[in-house]
Image (cartoon, rainbow, N blue to C red; front, side, top):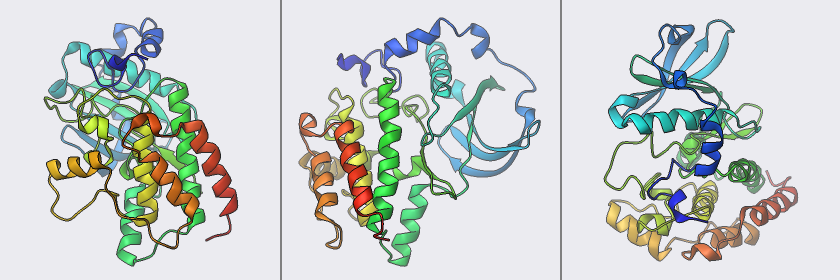
Length: 310
């Protein structure tokens, strides 16, 4: 595998260049041309998320009455012409995903100098909100609940990797919850294009608390970087905080903790199976982390074992 796919040179936000090239020839320039009137089909209601260059709304698609999330990105503020074309092409690729644990991209277009992406809406917020509420209440998640959430995320990331797409920003705020208990992974691999510009954008992609040691060091990274982020998330489901969170941390100190792989033990009441999997995934050496197939089988077995631990 060429490291250039993953945060170097010609990388396109986590998508294998070959996968993107396969569909690029089928996407005409009309897909990135400015249109008019299309955004008027969506009635925007409340803001549910903000970024430096983007806003996410809860909205309604007027012709169908369907509730959706509508993301508007100031695409002309953060990209040159080629980046804009690559990004829109990539959204088209992500629209092809059809998996029960992945947020569905329903439409995308450029209007009024903004990239508009419409997505499936989850009615119970995100995992970050659940963790925050549990922490405030002093109530840990039952182990059965932890495994239920985690196994669903494993199947989502496995589907992405099978389609040669890295996520690169797995964190609680990108994991969405539905009233039926279905967990859905969102913000699929778009983190480099849809984040603020930095001099390190090609190597420092994602949220610092969930970055792998190799990413923190600015080294080439690949699929196992997503494994690290999943390990951080599994730890947080159990401990209700990120493994590397400390009061008053700055970026330098955080980087030192991550590269040294220093984190507190998980609460005693969780099983050895959970603790062992976290330790295996949070390995400083990327080559020693288990692969997703192995993790998924192991997690599914634990889900069955702890199903009634609620």
